[in-house]
Length: 89
Image 1 (tube, rainbow, N blue to C red):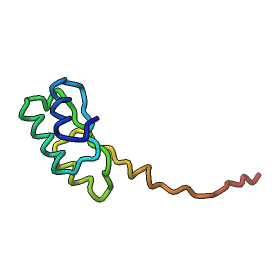
Image 2: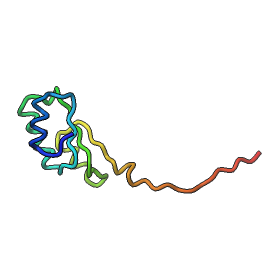
Image 3: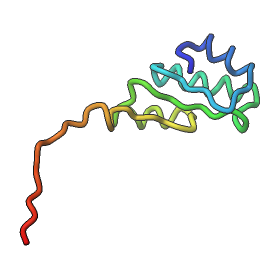
Image 4: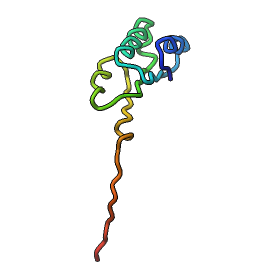
């Protein structure tokens, strides 16, 4: 997990299987994907983006070149409801 381009480049040089880009804006994520491509590692290292992703902005992140997107808004903002079930025989 990295949260700056500088950390990303350091991690990239270690050649992990996947790097999570956490809490970065879409433009910075796009730059990271371009750096990965420039290093010729697009087929070797997956990029996942997380943090601040919502259903309103996910399309912009999808256009950046990352491989995986985690949308916490799907579970973070779920509200529970109080209900019961009655079985009648």
